[in-house]
Length: 256
Length: 363
Image 1 (cartoon, rainbow over the protein chains, first blue to last red):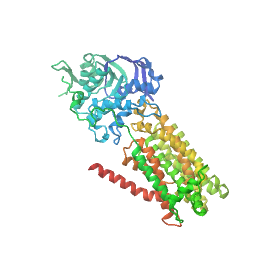
Image 2 (cartoon, each protein chain N blue to C red):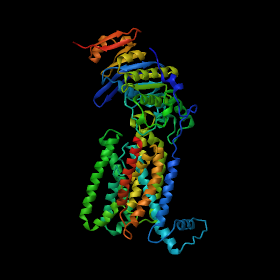
Image 3 (cartoon, rainbow over the protein chains, first blue to last red):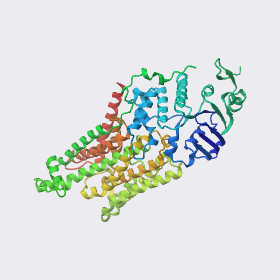
């Protein structure tokens, strides 16, 4: 669904992403992990064409850098780490922004657009608050709203940059479960940067570990989340354990 | 791991419109009707207030008598008809156009630069127009008919300079560098304007009068002069009202939604600048309208640009017509500069709206 072929991104003299060649299958959830500054956000922004890149990225067989912005927005929905949430915008106005790629330059939302968005709000448990201002919503509600806007684009690919960083533990798991359910239900391909390694291992089908702009380790969670790899690339001493139901658990190891 | 998805809880969540699903569309109708009512009232006051006692009905009859192909005799005395047609009506219409443009341009600039304090003068329109006008005034009487042209040229030139400088010094398309370039260009042009003004102290009063803004010289020819610019500008701004809402989530997210935000932004800036430059060319630098009116609309409605742009235009027209009525009646027969009125009346009113909104929210 997404292919990277020798993708390099430079900011002035700094190389943020170096010669990345990878592939993400349709319907797959690929997690991007790596220390701060490893290039996770850069990679996501390059797919959304918010950054110029060398090499070639394709989505659904089409080359990203030569696609019209509108076509790309119908293929790829991008949720940044800290989305802009205008405090006096209403929930309905916000989720309708997601229909932008389907509306002409001078056009306005059709009843169909409003139906799609109304249903999404109901599905994400926000149906009762469509006229509320964003400033009155809780963190968990905002998180679901941002997802609703992304889903309103009806794009097959969802790019999520640290989708849970602002949430407490309960909301965090809830949000990821929601993404998982939605991608199964709608057959979405998900590429997301994930901070929490345990959650990354639980939810992603495959992980790409980035270090200094290069993919240093790729594979199933238990192949990537190893004590050696984490020590080398995160500079952290960790223990990797298995929970009773078989999930990987990454725990910081404190030297005493 | 157990999954408690909100999806499964949907049935338990009371929705405001069960079954319906579709969201209500954002409608500007109510606020537009209210604003039109205010505009009508302002026009009625504008044509009837003044040294000669004339009614709104008389004004309507005079207007009707000027409609081509309609042979209607107004029944209003010749002198009254002339006062209405030659003096009051053009002044009211010009005030309306200028007010609509300043308020609409202010709303658009606030949207494009995502800055609540942005106004149409942000990128140097006022400084450029001021320099152009001052240059003509100090050059002497014989050039005075070129004053609007010089002010217009100065305004457009200043914004062009701002854009060129902003785009070369900063990251391409970054709004911050453009706004900063606007500050620098405005400071530079104001310095030159002040220098010119000080070198020609005998013209100080006319320069000053122009800068404070006035509709005293309003005739139909000024109306005809600026109408095309204001009309095109208004149409472009209105056509972009949905995209202004998209820009509210910032450049990156707007781009990721398939909008070429830098292109949209420059289109809106060009349109707002042309209209504002035309308005300023005939009325001088009337301040405050571009900030107060859009914010009042924003605070009293749902803040969507689909509402803010059209309602600001209508409300701005009404506001400036009323401000002009005050400017020419409060100290009649002498006139107060209209810029003084807009600030004097507008600022407290704005604070009042701000305060009542805050109270309304906390209860």
